[in-house]
Length: 174
Image (cartoon, rainbow, N blue to C red; front, side, top):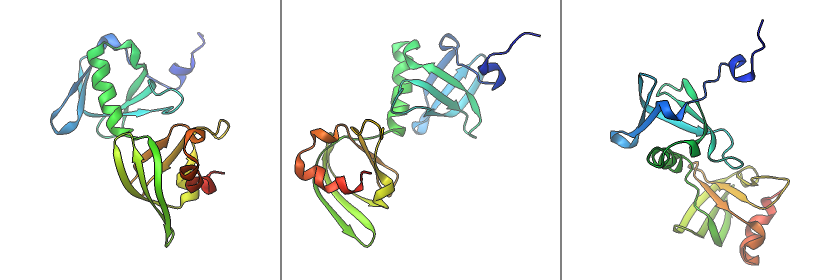
């Protein structure tokens, strides 16, 4: 009996870039043509969004059934890579915070006014101790802030923030 590798045991399909064609669809979705099968409204999710953002991308159909895994988007043509990256950028929209203008605690919510790489933003955070955290607790460099609507904001380098901005979120970083 031949020994099986982990992808065979787990029934993981690694998507072959030479057999896959991603295309934009109406309504802001993308489709996938793969080995003779057409999939409409496919969904992409990063398995390791911060450590390997361009690797191990799960591709699912509109019902959430896994089609396969993209090992790395770098194996795709520039045109295909642009379609994949465009879809991932929509899902993982995370403007970088460059300065925290104000952070006010009102009735269990933190209300932020910030400057980001895409302009000024105002948002609320519920349960700040859970939704303001270091992305990698061992490195304590990048911080993610998730607002009440599920949007993510990133402080790329906590130590590079001005002292006034850092003081506004430091109490929540454990």
